[in-house]
Amino acid sequence: MTKNIQNIFAASLQQTNLSPKQQAVLQASLDLFSTQGFNATSTKDIAQAAGVAEGTVYQQFKNKNGILQAILDPFIQSVLPQVVQDFTTEVGTRQFDDLEDFLTYIIKNRMLFALENMAQIRIFAQEIFRSDELVTQVKKQLGTLKTGSLAHQLQEFQQRGQLVQWSLPRLLQFVFSTFMSFILPVIITNRDDVNETQVEQWTTEAVTFLLHGLTPQ
Image (cartoon, rainbow, N blue to C red; front, side, top):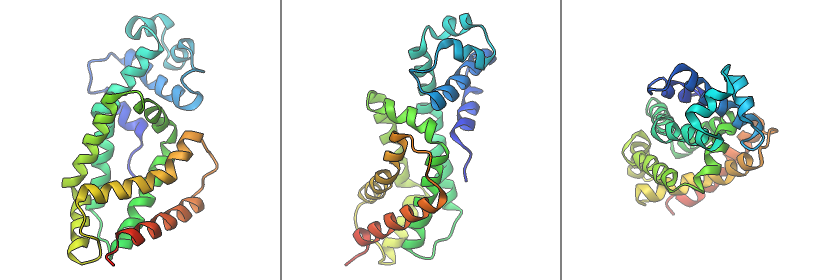
């Protein structure tokens, strides 16, 4: 399993010009927004969790919306690209027997990742509907999948005659939308009762559906 979003976020902050206190504020904010929600978190909560004076929070970020934007910027510039890169690297190190084996691996892998990082992903998901920049960046990162190891595997299955001769963007859209249909309701409703048995069942159902639609007739 790849490293989690919280760790990637912390590493991305270290590459900025933010002071250690400012980094601590953003890390504490991400944790609190994830666990108790944006509206339920006060700047006092953030200051206490970060180990700084509340005035320090206001001085740099003005208010909670300023903090949220300061969190989203690294998500756009560093976290999302790193998540995509980590995943494609994982895929590139594996050998797959057939299309079913490949789909089972990527669907289960991403479901487990999403559940592990559900709280952080929820913040991102809530904002994407209000930010054209986030939408643009998500499309950009999904676009990079067209030239990586994921695309190579799909082309290989097409050459074997196991996969329909659709364009790579169309295939990726089909797979991504199927995956999201299972995981997005869990993230939005903040379910905490999903276990690995459930993930196995969802993976089987998703792969069965995808094979029916993607296998040449």
